[in-house]
Length: 218
Image (tube, rainbow, N blue to C red; front, side, top):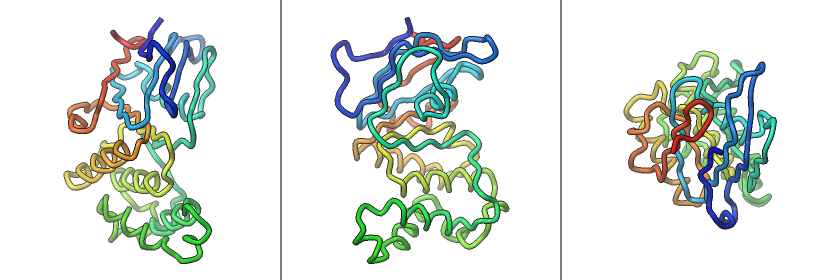
């Protein structure tokens, strides 16, 4: 059994997997995965291509169902895929504004119109301000990834699942993305990051999981 769990009950608000299996077309991709990730913890998921990193995140996000085992999620989940895509005709500012309004914590804050300020702050963290008036269909892959991170920041879910979030980011955007993860950690979010670049997260990561042949390498 592939396991990395609390020997007692996991803490309140933890992501919990027990005996999870998943395959495709008769091929086993994840085998008996058991794992706890606590609030305020950043866990890196590493391993070669085909090891099951993306499959693991998609299972936790609810995009896939396990063939066996149990996945327990404490609250709202935000997922940034390896190749995020948004309606190409929409402007970046429109997307951010829509999420800012939908995720405003109270009706009064929606009425007072704090959305534009939240949008400017999120865009500023990732260097997107000058791009917001333009349709995202003309944006580069790195800019779209930055937009996905800004949208997650505005949506403010309890669990954040990031698949190669630093791909194609320049130095300034890298600092902004890692800064966001640091903030999420300080605010008690559960953060899992699938990455081939674990060294880029050395200042914010609490643990590293190595997936090989569908199991957590001990």
